[in-house]
Amino acid sequence: MHNIIRLNNINKAYGMVIKTKVLKGINLSFEEGTFNSIIGASGSGKSTLLNIMGTLDRPTEGEVYIDGIRTDTMNKDELAELRNKTIGFVFQFHYLLPEFTAIENVLIPYMIGNSKPSKEVIRRANELLELVCLGEVKNNLVNDMSGGQQQRTAIARSLINNPQIILADEPTGNLDSEATENIYDLLRDINKKIKTTFVVITHDDKIAEKADRVIKIKDGVIAMDSLKKSRMRIIK
Image 1: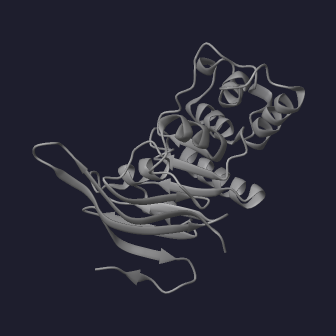
Image 2 (image 1 turned 90 degrees about the vertical axis):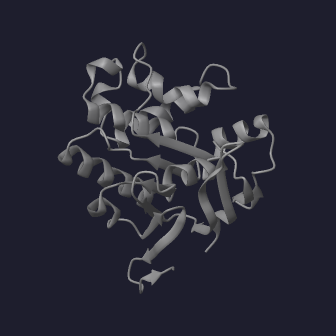
């Protein structure tokens, strides 16, 4: 199967005088259409790894490929265009604009670099809100929705440009256990229906176990890489 994300010998260090090495020789690839989870303690490097995959940060050393295209050598404008067309993001905090309705928030990524959305795009926004079970509240302002509804809106927004990849960093960190289960069930359902590749960071081992693959990061290296229905590989 085609590797939609590939990381070759990724190192990341912060600081000029005293350097702190956060990632150390990471080699990873993710197959198209799979649902993957990254776990690890706070400070292990998992969010830095996700940001490098999403081209929000650059590695100190190493190569990053998205759908066969090397991204770590691109300029800011090229990266912004690639992100907008290829990658959707879901964060712990939804980052919705409170002065807009749910459907208006969903349309915002499309409107970056585009004129007024066409009827076809508006229809897609409506379909995505139906997919995340928000059709009845699509015209509600953000502050008139629950935390779970706001995060569902953020998920619909991440899908508006038909991205090949969704990167999610603790997407249920602010939700209760029931809402967390519902959101992860929704993400898996989206993965199965439209074959979008998911890479999800979570601190919840129970949630991680629902993924096709679980990767554990410890002290900047891969400590575990486990495929469902496959023998676990421990990397020392």
